[in-house]
Each structure stands twice: as structure tokens, then as C-alpha cells.
Image (tube, rainbow over all chains, first blue to last red; front, side, top):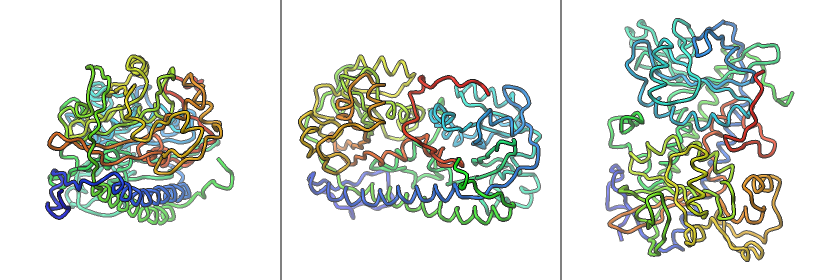
Length: 246
Length: 257
């Protein structure tokens, strides 16, 4: 029987089991279950907190290029009152969409069968021109609606696209803080609400690890012995490929 | 939306203040979730000596065969009993999610399978109908589902005393509205329907030996049910009164408003 101390904790690629009887396992599992239930309750609490956020009225008019031609932000709701926008990193002239966003995007269509039936319209928006978006979408076989914010301030105002000026200064406001400039495009999620008068409000945005729980594959990896198994990599998601590149 | 629950409209500065407060709570939640994942990886393992047989698209298979060269196996216990005519609608919504990303898991040393007690031909027909591509095995005639606490006998159901989600259950007293609706949608009676249960199990293969490392049930599946994580970010949240979800080909077509 191996003990937990025999292998360094940093090498996650090696599984490090302690083999026990079912009765002994059950004791450890039930202890973990108590903590899991606490976490679920905490997650519910944070979700309540999120729903209590105030809203900010969107005064600016944004226009996007999409499969149905020009559409405003208010148009994108498509008859529903809630809009979730995924900010997909695909800048003008990029050869292909961001690899990590493509990994996330493999989760969108499955959820999006159901979201419209809870009054949610889901769309993806990128700064590349529509023709570049559509070519990549076709290659990846996705169904979700994907629009271009090319020439609009939308991405900049939502803090997911950055200017040459930001790059020169090596400073960028991302995930609610000023840090080093990383890329012209960054990932994020923004949520909007439209009331009966047609007024649009910004309710929520999340960035960086705020997107973590939306990556189902990670939630699944969190259940297996090796976990995400990324500690030895240069960066998280280093192992990820576009689904047609494995 | 409930009138008194409509949040106030604020200035950008006010919103930002509230958002940053929430961000701290979100970061704490993420850290707690990471911590729990670490604890999960430290769980001991139980050696599986029993021989389980499955029917798969490639023929008869052992539990070891399901790993397909990987060292880790995730089994989604999909509620689809031999007497069902279609798979459970909730499991189907969960499967809509993982169908998109099994390819990433398979390239990160994890094979994900759905396993159900219905005969393989039924599973194959339903999988075709739903347009899924993940591997799905039949455990018909095997003890696999019973041993992993996701299937119970009529007697156990009548008398109680079986364990689901690590708790002993009372004798069954009839199904609620949700289970009754979904039983009818699955072509079976409520009692038969709820003898199958949902769950997720993790197994490991090392030196030719299979180990059971983890199982989760009931709300333990909540974070694995993709659509809910999106709804949790919308102003109305999950916005649920009863079971609203359907199989993805069974929603009524909405008239364009």
C-alpha cells in the first residue's frame, strides 16, 4: 500500500492511491460529501448575491453584423428579456479563433438547447469582421449565433478588447483591475436585461477564472484522480487543442 | 420577475462597487472549489475485483475495456431502464452538455461513458435520435448499477433501507409531479422510473487493476449540469417552477415574437 507521502504533491501526472476497504473509503467519502454540500450551498448563496446586483442602463447604441444583417444590442434579445454574451477572442485578421475560447465554445450548443426556454438568449460576439467569424464557425461546426462588433466600441466598453495605446503603456483594465497588457482580445461574459419599454441594462460581467464554472470539462476533471492535471504545464489549458486538431 | 426583486438601476460607479464585492465572494467560491477538488484527489481507492460485463457498439466489454487506453474513467449513470422507451429528460439535458466536450476529456487521459441498464439497441436508437456521439454502454444483466447505488429492486423500493447519495432511503411513498411527468415522457410508470437513479462515478486503472475512486449523486451533479451554470449568471437565475426542461427535440417551437 502506498502512502500519501511517498510522492511529491507537485507531480499530478502520477496517481497516488491509498487502497482501502469499502468501509474505510465510505468514511472518507462522507466527510467529503459534507464539504461538497457546504460548497453547493455557498454557490447558491453567491448566485443569490449575483441576482441582487444593481443594473446600469446602456445609453450607447451598439450595432453588430450578424447572420440576419445589422442588429442593435436591443435586437439581439430576440423577444426574450435576458441576453448572455460570450466575448470570444477572435480579432480582425486572426487566422483562427482563440484555442481556449474554442474549448469553452464546445460547451455552448449543449446548454443553448435549453436556455431559450428560461427566457435567455445566448450569443457570441467577436471583433473580427463577420466573414472571418463565419468561416471559423463553419470549420468548427457550431450552431450558436455569432456576431461581429467590428468597428463598434462594444468590446472596448466591456473591457475585452484593448487598444494600441494600452499595449504601448503595457497596461490594461481587465477583470476589474489594472494589470499588464496581455493581448488585444481577452475572454469574458456579459449579461444584459431588456425591460418592457425596450430599455437595455447591463447586469453582470465576468472574466478570467470567473468563467471557470462554465467549462464543464473542468468540472468533470475535478472528479477524477488526476484532477485538471495542469500543474506541470507552462500554462493552464496548454494541453487543450481545437476539437479538430487532436 | 417578482416585482420587489427587481434590482435598482444604479450609476456605473455604484454598480462597480457592488460588483467588486460580489467578485470577492466569487473568488472565495472558486478557491473553495479548488480546495475541494484537491481533497477529492486525495480520497483513497477501493479495488474492484468483480467482473462486470457491458454491451457496447464494439461488442462485449469488461470494465477495464471501457478505459480505452486511458488511466481514468468517468461513468455517467444515465437513467434508462430496460422498460423505458426513452432516456430520462434530465439526464438527456446533462448529456447535451458533455456530448460537446468528451473529446477534450479523452485527450486528457479520461474516458467518459454513459452507462444504462436498457438494452444496447435501445440506447443506440435514442442516441441517434438525440444526435449524440459519446460512448454509451448497456449494463443489462450486470450488477454494476446496483453496486454503484443507482438501481434498486422493487423489494428495496417497497421496504426502504437502500442507500442513495450515501443515505438510507425510507420505503417509497409515491412520486412527485416531476418524476410522474418524466416517467410518462419515458414510457414507464413512476415506480419503475425512480428505481433508476442518476450519478457519476470515477474509476482508475493502474497496473491492470481497476479501482473505484469517487461517486456523486443528486445535487452533487448540479455543477456538472451545464445549463444551470449559465442560468445562474442571468438576472432571473434558474427561474424554476416545476420541471420546465424537455428533451432538446421536444420543446414546442416558439412563435417568433
